[in-house]
Image: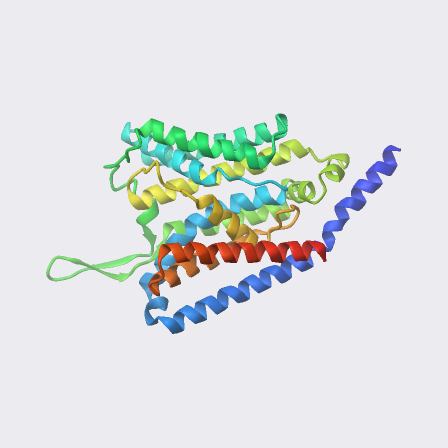
Length: 343
């Protein structure tokens, strides 16, 4: 009987062989949508392709992308993480408080990431040990993390954190600045923003983990067929815990990037960011049913959201209309995912 069960489990895990083709088609359609958006906004505004606007898009997308990568890992396991926006704020507050207390910036940011990972670990343990649905567990963490951030700061921002704190969010690689005769600096080349470089490194690392490491295969197996994965020897609970810890840690990294850009730790930041992260993953082809998703697709989804917001801002569209448009895009992406699953 044991051999029969193992054979059935292996057979269940082979079902996801048919899913990558549909996922690739979804990513291809998302990429086509991204190209259409770029062409459309560039025709609507001559300044869309300017260097400054390109850097703005990169900076805006970096936070969404970092959150989206962690969210993708969770969604592939068949879960959801509604707490990343609040965890982002809490991690940024922890970093800001440590810097204010005299700790060097890098160790302080490390503690901020640890705080985010701890929130993710709590999410994972509540889901795997207490058997509470991910929606409810992470919704509770969303309230807890936001409340902690506001309580620790008295709902007031932590300012005067120094120039070193703002280097991650506002610095750039290969920036060229020339001093003019009048004594004022002139930027010859703005350089590549550090947040964009960080996003690239994290995306490559996450893609390597998902595609080339055992834990990545276990993440896909858990989302494809949890019972079959368990019968095949996958430690399903540990795999889920890993995914939620990664989501929390990347929310901590995103919190450091965002607060560094502001050079202020804002406990009220990150509201609704979890929806952007979910949207980026789903638009990029991740299935809310689990078992399907890729970092490359999430990056495409993040840039779709970033460019859509940027282009609508340049067109003078109000923030309220932008929310409506983003909501319609998310519903459309989920509908496509449901059609794909039925087929």
